[in-house]
Length: 564
Image 1: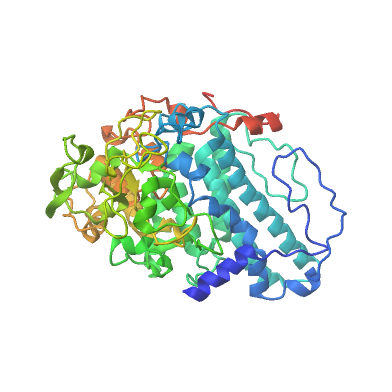
Image 2: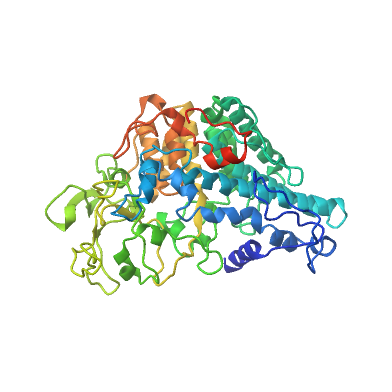
């Protein structure tokens, strides 16, 4: 495992400069600036002596994956895919996390095109597209000049094209109608969307992603360990499966059988299986999980940026784990998602004590209740908090900066407010990933993008969509439930399916997509436009993000999405 991680980290960090091939590495897509391509780049590495082996190609490919490091922090992908849903809430606790009402607008789906989430999302994924385009150009140029073997280069060019399609899949999902740019040298300075009509443009982006993945899939590696953290055959199959699962949203036409074809390719490969326990997938050293298909292989020293511990924990939690830096007391799970795991009526199973949410006079509004012992309760940190020495933590500074006699620190699943008067201890904290004692600002857990449990749940859904009485669909869902220690379902409906996805895939950036896909299915509830705590009914146009104001101002050829 360590050698695999080391190889990926080397790929991420090594930069290859060649006099003949490096062209405008710092160019940003859609920027108005021009670049002098004639300026020489001094280097001892040239196309003639570099692109000769697999490892040399791999070491040049780091930039194609570098934008994925934004996924594990609290950046724009998580803001859009988690904080706009009923899974995650970021209350403004006094002045902390108020940020001019930004988090209120995100959580309540009242955002504007000027909010930074959307420009950050756009830049993150289009930077990935641009990096892939540059590397494709470099590799193809090396082949054309005779400096690189065409057969050797072909696999890596296919990998880059599939990664470009991966970035476009998320742009399709978020913005719908976006420019399709496949050239690096000849790219338009201000590219247009495929169509001024949103539906036609989104369909064109869908067709592009489908074509790129289909054309390159069979040329990708099937070596799951040798390509750990990289695009391989199974990552491409999973991206296609997700494209087809959401095809009705994107194009108006369902593609359930096409989704099943790609999901079965992953299942039938025998390369993946469910881990023995749910939390095996999220340990500090989770690169040994048999379940994780695509990850960002973070490292606290060499590949930083995964800072969940800082995002979610209270300031006093520093003393629980002996963190080197004080957490920020921010991101929390909603009461709704916490209750979905402990509700004994929805999850019949072994009984035991868990923290409830009904107000009492003791323990800051918590009470002990009888509920289901679902392994996925470990996704949440609630209740009284203690130091690493077992002493009760005090919420110091709650009354003044110098106060050392605040109340005991107790995380309550209930949140009293979303704006400035939110209490500092409210909100179940996100405990999905194992936290390493004594770490600094970054974690070493690999952040999960695709996981085998999702493959099984998607297959179950695709089967159920075509036959609500499918016994195979029911059995697949119950595999997931059994692994988590809860009793199997006796039947399936839309509410059970989406609720199980919410429990299993909490904080894996699937919730927004799932809520939109399930809207109105068999009259079901709990959908993206529905009201929940602190969020009113929202209009369907908010199922797609606005084209960011910054991009509209920089590129007059862009057309804003409907409703904005």
